[in-house]
Amino acid sequence: MNRDEFIQLSVEYAAGALHGDELTAFEEYLRTAAPQELNELAELVETTSLFPMALDQVTPPPYVRERLLQKIRSSLRAREAVEELSREFSGAKPPSNAPGWKSWMPIGVTFVALAMIVAFAWYVNNLLTTIEKQDRRLVELQNELTRKEELLNVLAAQHVEMVVMRGTPHYPVAYGKIIWDPEKRIAILQVANLPPVPSDKDYQLWVIKSAEGGLPISAGVFAVSSGGSFYFKIEQLAVTDPGEIAAFAVTLEPRGGVPAPTGAMYVAGSPGL
Amino acid sequence: MVFLFAIRPAVTERNEEELRLLERIGRQDQVAFAELYDRYASVVFSLLVRMIRFPAEAEDVLQEIFLQIWKKANTYVQAKGNVYTWIITIARNRAIDHLRATQHPLRGWKMDEDVLLQLQDDTHQSNPLVAAISSDYERFMCEGFATLSPEQRRVIEMSYYEGYTQAQISDHLELPLGTVKTRMRQGMIKLRDFLKERIEK
Image (tube, rainbow over all chains, first blue to last red):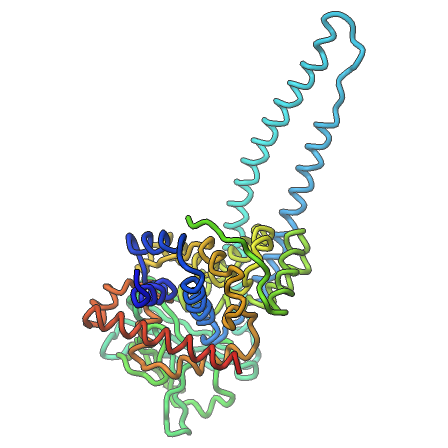
């Protein structure tokens, strides 16, 4: 492989664009690659690993951290319990001075004890797998519950504002609403009957202010997987005074969103309408 | 599976510190684990939201990733590579697994973590990009992407975040395959050189 080919394949490898046989062949080549070649590839891999730093940084909700730590504490406790039980089993000592046929007793006892330990380990392993599956499901349900609680918290605020959005002529069956707490600038976006988003697109929510020349400001992107009703939480709505809002709108844009709307509008609404 | 070369410590102080954190995590130190989480949860979550797009699903995957880090910390300490890159590689791989499992259309490619370790061999100690991450990197990366043409940026993002092959990108953007390859190469080289220059300054 000449240098030019190596650079091309390294670029594709680092960007995640190398697949199938090409990928296998390239990884095979790396087994015997020269240090300089590996260095060039490493630079490209490090470059792509920094890509996420250029994204708008999204902080995960605090409950994710809490649950993770809780899960770790539980697994440590379970492991300690298993270790404790294993110690108790292996600590059992057979009698040492038995006469006649009883001299086989220590071997028998050891064998039985070993068999019990193996059976117990197998049982515990199955049990831990089941617990892990149930834990995962529990985490999903807890996350879902927390998300719903967060939505209810917004609704429970003393002052909330709401704007109803209706389907545009482009997609009249869709509808949605924005409910927000102007004090905390937290909002809920509810949308329904939007078509599932294509793989290369995202829906993007826009705030259009009366001032600033009516230029739309992005309030975030989201995706829906089916035509049902979906809720999204918006952490920092770029609006402090409800009076400054002219409208909200949702458009379909290239995946990841764009600085200004370019795609078809699906729902839109203004305060008081 | 690629065999590993001998791995020696990466050069930077911050990475040394993170390797010590991993070492403590390997000894089941929950405080160290919480510290590592606080350091990287946001950047990992941002990557997941970008790839998976459904924040609720991204939260579940984030938990799985950090559980994997908890379980595999010891293994990685022995390799002594770049902790940040390792975490991002795990995150992207898990996101691709999730997208496949949930039948999203993405056909992502996963980097073999052993290959990553090989690349972090001591032969790269002079490489400024094999370095710890500082807050400057966020700015560097944004500035770096701003130097790309929208076309170069699009093909790189479609590949890295969305898992398209170059042939699929070519079909999707209705471009000759050669043009896709050229844009990807020019964009990646430009980004790499920009970052190297900034970091070396």
